[in-house]
Length: 350
Image 1 (cartoon, rainbow, N blue to C red):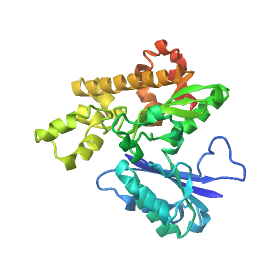
Image 2: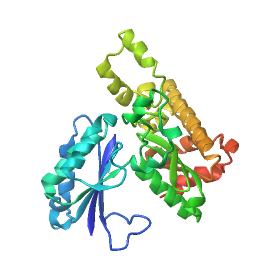
Image 3: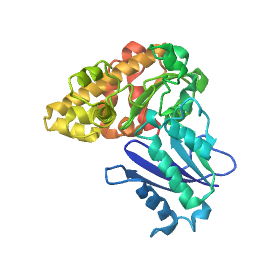
Image 4: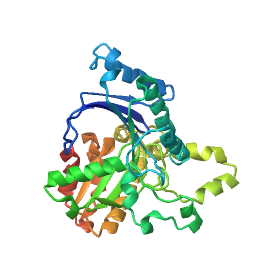
């Protein structure tokens, strides 16, 4: 069976083709083909269509035709309260995903557009939606409910958590590499990419995470602020420094590493600027690491100690970002975690 997998992120779109037999392996096999598009203002969903069709129309096709693909899987960032398990995509499912698009403005709408592209190219081929929020359904109410009016919770305003597909995979992979039963482990998985989140995982189940109702909460990210004092927003609105329609854009696209450094949302660019003596790049890095340390401490407290610290995604795994990992674990002696083990986890997960 050939399965095409589409992973829409906030800064890129990854497409991979897999060949699977009847028995599913613990770890995914190497893809038959993979490609990636980095999002820019002038690149839209049409680029995904062009990329997918190169599978059978390109200079070096890997398929005879689109009929060779049996199924398409999509990573969907927000499933809301309705979707926790993978589902086959139908018009009703698409409507449900659209209904929570406001909760994940950088993701869900684009993912729906890609689903439409696949329908255009492949007709009624089975499409499966896998939700990033699903893994965090085990988070207890004390961690999931915001301390505002209780009516918020009854209306679906709660902490959902994100990056769940990757957090779940990394927990299982870490257990196998450590040769431990996942049910016995207390893990903190650190997904550090353009979007960043931590998850506290006990016995294979998420019990807390840093992202919440939207992927904006929590750690400092590439272009997202992470958690800030909510009082800042009405203050800026009252002073005319910010218009209501600008809030989403400022917090999701003009903050984080980009907002503080004034240079880039890419950690590699920030680190290069630090070497050139750029003070705002240094400040951006210091805030990033401080917030990361604080988040790890909070997750460790939820777990009552940790057995391993796992790093994943672009910033977490890149060898050039060792200073991020070393900064993150600089104070782990107080939470009983081996610095050497934490520092090498990204290598283990490859």
